[in-house]
Length: 71
Image 1 (cartoon, one colour):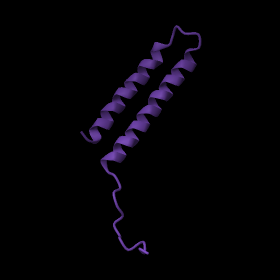
Image 2: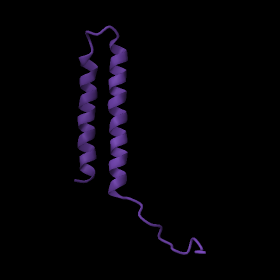
Image 3: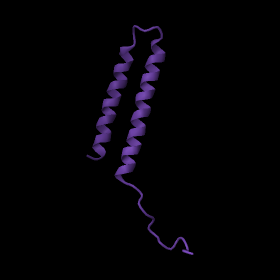
Image 4: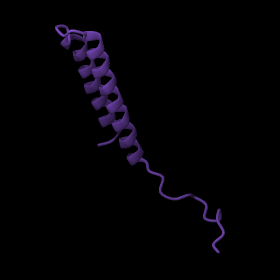
C-alpha cells in the first residue's frame, strides 16, 4: 500500500460525487442536498488523504543536533 491507494480512493470519491449529481432529483431542494453531499465527500477524502500521506513520510527528528544548547 502506498500512494496508489490515495489515487484509487480518489477515483471512488469522484464516483460517489457523480452519483450524487443524479441521486437527489425527487427531493424538495436537490441543489442543497447535492452540494452538501459533494462537499462532505470531498472534504472527508482530502482529510483522509493528507493524513495518510503524512504518515507515509513522517518528520521524525531534525537533521542537526547542534540547534539547542543543553543546560
